[in-house]
Length: 150
Length: 150
Image (cartoon, helix red, strand yellow):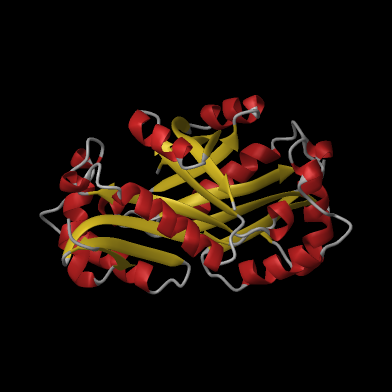
């Protein structure tokens, strides 16, 4: 396979990103790939926030993965800054290609560069394969993740 | 007990906030209440970020609780904005006073006001009482929370 580049997402990447969000057991019922309007609005908000880092992975110019890294300052742990990884998606064609590992390496490196002492993420309890992947990478499943829909 | 007010934290609240962060089974070994320097730096960073809402609860002018609400835009779920609750602490004197519920009500109301569709938080697996509290409030423990120390 050709070279893989991880770079900041641009507006032109949105159709490919949303297609990946929708091509997922949980995302299928949550996303609307035929109407990009809400995604364009959200993309602009992400682009305007210096603590948001939305990236894509591109192989030979084709978008094959996406990840959102958020930098969160805080008081606890002696004023530690933490990062949160959200919205990791890897194109079906790229499963097993090592892109997941490349993404985690990128996220950890960028978190260090931003002065974070902690990287965190939550993963749906149904995603057992993902949990084993994160644990192999060194993450500890030390917390329960609670969500409330408004 | 006197009236309870939830308001944005100011720099003068830092000693009381840090004392609460340290007065906690997990926080005791993580915090440095005798040296506020790192907390002052982190407080300024929070104050400069419009997506960060660090609040305190004050009863008759005395700080008795703290909570950090972070607003996170995103692409998934049709461009949903979510909020994350971090660093919830209630002074030992206030346990059972209803402050935890008041805090959650405040966080949900503020999240709605900020246009969020989802409120989320993670809680250490050892905090069983907190888990039951969050579930009574309507949160679902649908995720595992992974952390990696840098």
